[in-house]
Amino acid sequence: MNIKLLLLLILPLTGFSQVTGLWHTSFVVMGMSKRLDLNLEITSKDTSGWIKDPESRSATKIPLDEVRLDKDTVLFSWTAGRLSFEGNYFSAVDSIGGVFHQGGLEWNAFFTREERVLEKLKRPQEPQAPFPYTSEDLLIENGEVSLGATLTIPDKKGPFPVVVLASGSGAQDRNCDIMGHKPFLVIADYLARNGIACLRFDDRGTGKSSGVYMRATLEDFASDVNACVDYLKTDDRFIQAPVGIAGHSEGGMHALIAAKKNKEVSFVIELASVGTTGLDVFLTQQYEIPLKESGDTAMAEWNRELFRGACAIVGAEKDAETRTKKLNAYLDAQYQTASEEVRKEQPIMAFKMTVQMLLNTEWFRQFQAYDAEDYMKKLSIPILAINGGADVQVEPEMNTLGFAKSFSKKSKPYSDAIVVPGLNHLMQHCKKCTVTEYSELEETFAPEVLETMVEWIMENQQNFN
Image 1 (cartoon, helix red, strand yellow):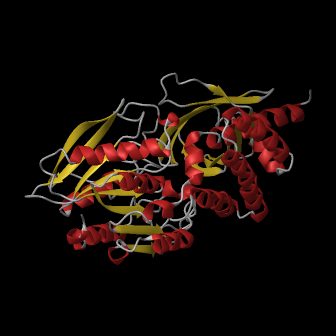
Image 2: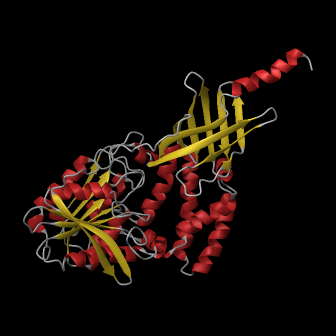
Image 3: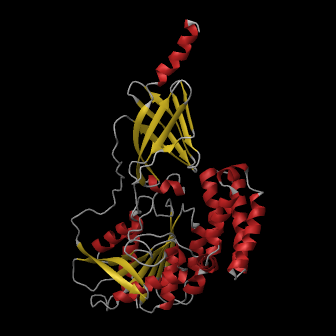
């Protein structure tokens, strides 16, 4: 080997040797603060590495499937986790900066040699002491299920209105902790500071609540809401007080179902909820969300029609075994029409399992059959419906119109359905207004919606039963 060739072999290794060893980063993604360790090993034969979550109990080292170094460029990927990183090495500050990609998400990361602490989420609306109200932790019984709850009570002489908060789809704790935000904590704090008591509770199987969330139906969730209403009416402080329900998203469905069954409910507030049918909202979601995230109209249309056909099978077949067989056959056929991108991201078994687990349940059968008008026409109590104008999960115009035309003759004079421009599904002022943006926004809940809720409750007290 001549000296010139030897230098060619040594020079790249000399540059890349600065990148070898252990690196640390911290970042926020989907409202979660994370740390990650990266180790890069480079020899004359190959490059390799591993990543590790130092926050996990096992702290398992996950081998990387690919590590590529080209001049100052650093690339690595973990195929099973659908995770990849593209960045650059900055020799002046001995660091690696770049972008992670995973399942349609992307976020910035900056690796250093020093260990990093978890980044603190910026949530300026989260309540800070001192609090001008008292909080009581409760355990409310509903048959075989116990519900962990918190009751906030203004520090002044009652009686005063009290609101039960009902959360949307997915197992939520009493603060409705989602995407790094705690909207129910913010709502409860604001209500209590303005003379309104509030009860919020952990969903079944979450926090201090017992039961199994995945086995529950819309009717079950509504019964949990009514258990909270009934509990309040056994408390001397609230026997003479109007008790209302404020439900967010699917929680608004729980609220109307509960109110129809319980004469103790004095009013209902619907937040980003369903004013039409569950099926209409679900199918609209399946178009609007992928369109907003990708801008691909063909993909969005394919997704909507996929679920339209699947929902038809779920609605028509009462027998679970028959539904499963028909859904499997349908999904096999639909998968063949999927784009290359869809087939690359999801093998057919994962694709079928995802749809089956979502749709082939009694909960979803009740969800898609739900029609807000069936409940609202039979309610004589005041109802306030607020939808965000930039909501891609519950289309605002269609659902606001649905609420407005469904008020009963008795409730209509004291009820209202409004759209607040520029708000997403979580009632945040948004910029991109995508689902993935929820966690990126510092605001938890729009102040004007909080103000509207309080003003409406206070102005309508004489109209509550």
